[in-house]
Amino acid sequence: MAQDRWYRMDNVAKVFLASANERDTRTFRMTCTLKEDIDKDLLQAAVLDALKERPQYHVTILRGFFWHYMEPTEDLPVVEEEDGNICPMLVGPQNFGKLHLRITYYHNRINLEFSHAIADGNGALDFLNLIVEHYLKRKNPGRFQKLSMTSGASEANLSEDSFRKFFAKEKNNIPNMKRPPKAYHLRGIKHPFNQTQYMEVHIPVAMVLAKAKALNVSLTSYIGTLLMMAIYNDMPTLMRLKPVTISMPVNLRNYYPSMTSRNFFNSVLVSHVFKGGETVETLAEEYQTKLKAELTPQAVEARMMNYEKMESLFFIRLVPLLIKNPVINMVNKRASKEVTVVLSNLGKMSVPNEVRDEITSYCAYCSTDKLFIVLSTYGDDLVMGISSAYRNTQVLRDFLKNFSDADIPVTVYSTGIAEQ
Image (cartoon, one colour):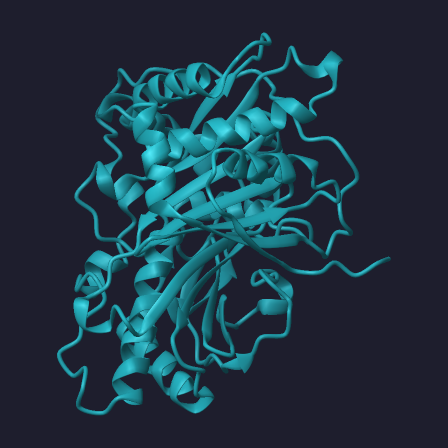
């Protein structure tokens, strides 16, 4: 990559940069657990191998007059053993000139952390798999020389701003999306600004799918329903007139022919106002109906067009970044009031047959100022990476108890929180 190469920031990245703070660093973590302990030196070499193939990640974010932008940096990642600091701040003045990613390891687990301004979960998963691919090749000389665990897309495709490419500026009939009402927010004291509770939950996916199939709904709708029911159980009586709203990121690569490794997602909202008497069966059916309506190609396109059309306005492009960032942050805070929790499903993790026995699991977490759950499936292992800003764990206890009550075994691992 030429050293004078620079990249525009996509619009999602601009929101993340304007809103990142000590409470919500806008960092996410993706992990891959292997069957054997990690060799630090081999992992270091594998990371450098992978970065050569993904120059769009070998960048630093700089501040322009009107917008941030990215350009190449000489900074190199240094692999370290995990220090317990999950999803740290990877953008800001303290990261000037540095990479906005971090790679650590713990026993047999590889951790990749990214600023969300650089990539989304699907792009980061591709990069994590590239690191794993190079690591396994170095760990097993001659055994995996033909192994390929990535999409194989070109650098141009991987670096593409797909929001800009697929935004139909010639369409003048883009419908204005009606703003949803303010949602119920979980109650209770939050952890200190620099601390978040992280949990890793393992559940047999076949058993969850069987329950979802019996209700004639998707796995995501079934889990979303159980989460809504748990939130309702913890709601004060006077707050039960407010909607419980779950935000779900949607991978736009499923709707547009894109192979970008940068941000390319939107979010849908499924909302319900409890009247009392709801059951898992009735709520799951409603949840599935609302989710399907939000995932039609027409609805997805309308959301993307509304999101993108703001930047196309000439007067907005001319506003200096010093003024623009606070406005973006204010709009983002307003949108946050429309969401109770976030539920993201990365889907099934597929790897080539020859390395299936080398990998035991995947997991993902995202920083948050509320409650954020990331689902991923590998083999028969459904993993939920849960991030919570709240000290009160009653909603999570009720949520996981819903699985136990359905005779689905649950295994939970959790980080500690320092007393302050």
